[in-house]
Image (cartoon, rainbow, N blue to C red; front, side, top):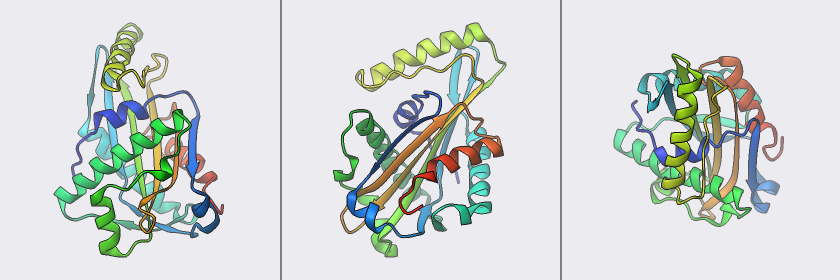
Length: 233
């Protein structure tokens, strides 16, 4: 299923300080988190960086999405996941992706300001999905990242400076993202747990690092970090 990239979320998610991590958990969820929770099929946006430009890559995103799904399924016993939820309606699927990614971006923004995302209301489409399927909690997982092709240090430095200006403009100065010209790739995972009854985000966590989004070992390592401090584990 083709998914459309969300530029603002990607740019804020790619504030790639090596091995960065940000986490927020509501007091109620920390005490009452179930052992496993259903998860929406992960959303993945991978960009291709080459010389003086960067562009969303549908092919790289598809490959990364397939790899992420495989790693999650093969290691499900190690993660607090009960089942995968596949949305068959393409239009609703894209709507969930847009609203969910905006919520993930907001959560990351809040964490940098030391604010609490757990008081933010859920998007309407996400609430509908949970109510229609009787999900008290639902996980949303997003991966964003990039790979460099035809690697050239001078060109990549120019790309990094250009992206820094672009992110500053798009986020009103809130974020400035620099692509590290010494790294050929990077990846970031953002995990949200939506609480239907309280109509808010119960849990948020993000990890990122200089990891290849198409490398199985790299993906597993980031996922392990992502779920390591999940409540009850």
